[in-house]
Length: 320
Ligand code: PEP
Ligand code: MG
Image (cartoon, rainbow, N blue to C red; front, side):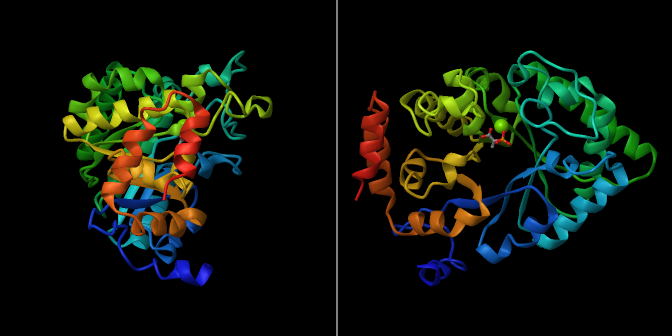
């Protein structure tokens, strides 16, 4: 089976009738980035940069971050490189950063809220990324954005970093910008945000947590945190429809994308791109290559009509 999967390594992620999708990898460190080509990915759809802070006692400075991003670009040789800015807070505790105790960390100072509250930390990362973009294409995305005011603040900080870099005569490159759509508010506020964005990526791990009001880390809540439910499917669909109407590329980078049996449904819903775990990539690619878009669209159409989790699951199992 492994050998059979290897056959998909060097072919594009394309359905039998020629519909091509981007198939990216989720990574957390440089070592994973180096192996992205080995599994036949089109690039990186999610680099979780907070992972680089997990086992260190001091924060990497601008120079260290810049070197890391440049090394990654070099290893990717022009393939897509999507960096997510630090997603600190909630279940991600870091030894090198002071974090206030919070009653409800998942509803607290996390993601973009944390970095906007710590602009020096944020600017260090933004400067390193802007400078690295001088050496290759980078897509930059922001976690936990709920509303357009947060984007206003982000873009103001980016403009400040660009001005400073210019003054210091340090080169920087243009970036593509996106957000991780991972709260119901982000889905509902997309209309105001899409004009400012080049792409969006749906983070179903948190989108499920916040839509179902169920802690993603609580083992007692497996029933309340379903991997796929009519509510979350509707939110994904709303995101895709709005992004397409605005001509903004739409990807999905949550764990859901790493389940090959869900792949036909996700592609059928019209996603342009999936970003998956390295270990699932070839299986997901095989699932794309073995079907045709007409079948996938029909499955999505039926799935979107289901109003029970069990029926939705049945719909997926009975496919083919
Ligand atoms: C998500 O929330 O779906 C996601 C991709 O990000 P993380 O799992 O890092 O929160
Ligand atoms: Mg998330």
